[in-house]
Length: 349
Image (cartoon, rainbow, N blue to C red; front, side):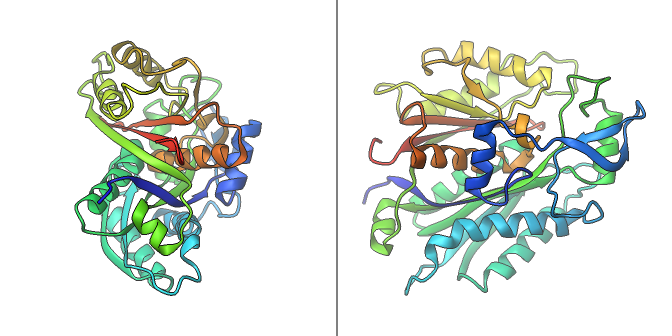
C-alpha cells in the first residue's frame, strides 16, 4: 500500500479572518490586525499591542477561549466529510501552547476533551491525544497524525493546534520578561491567538471517500535546540537545522524548496537561529532570504502556526500564486522543540 499522504481538509481561525480563505487573503494583502488592547497597559504606560479575535470579548479566557477558536477551525477542516454516507472514525491530535502564567498543565486535557465531545456530534471520533508543546506543536501534531496513518492506527486524522496569549496573566508575564513588543521594546513580539487544523489521509483513502487532495504532505522533520531563548546561551541553530535537513531528505535529490513560511515574530533570537540554521542546511532553498512571517499580520499564534501555514500553502496552490510546487513550513518552541514540514502541489510529489 502506498504511504503517500495528502491533506484533504484545512481550517483556520485567526485575528485577520474567521476561515482559511479570508485569513490567507488578508496575509497575502499584508493586512495586520495588531492593535491596542482595550484595557491592558504595559510597563511603559502604553496600551499593549496585541492581535486578538475581535469577535471574542477580552473577558473570555482559558480553555473556553481556546475552545471557541479551535471549534471553528476544526469544523472547517472536517467540512469535506459533510454529506458522505460512510466515514471512518477520525482520530484527533491537538496541540496547545506550553505551560505558562495563565495556562496551566491541565489546559490541554480540558480543551481536548471539550472539543472532541463537541465534534462527536459531527463525526465519529477515534483515538485522541493532546500535547502542550508550543510553536512547533502544530507541526508535531501533523507528524503524530502521519505516524498513526502509516502504522495503521487510523484512516483519517484531524491534526492541529490552538493558542491564545490574550489573557491578563499571560500578557503581564510577557511584559515582565521583556518579550512584549512596544515602542520601548522593539525586539519583543505581538501576542496573537488562532487555531489551525488539517485533515490527513492516505491517497487511497481520499480516493475511496471521494475527497479531493489539497496538497501532498511530503515529509516532516524535528529537532531539539539546547540553547534556549531567555538564557545566556548562544543559539547556533542546531535544532532547527536538524529539523530542516530531516524534512528535506525526501526531496534533496529531486528539487529545491520554492517557498518558506515560518514563525519568526520580531524577536532577535529567532532571526539569529534561522540565519545559522540556513548556513547548516545550505542548498535546500531557492532563496532562503525570501521567507514569509505571517506574525506581521496575525501576531504570534504559538501552537496554531504550522497548520495555519499549511492553509496559506493550500490557498496559494488553489489560486495559482504559489512561487513553485514545494513549500516548507517551520516553527520553534521556546522549550527547545523544532519542527519543519514540506508540502507539495498535488500531483507533483
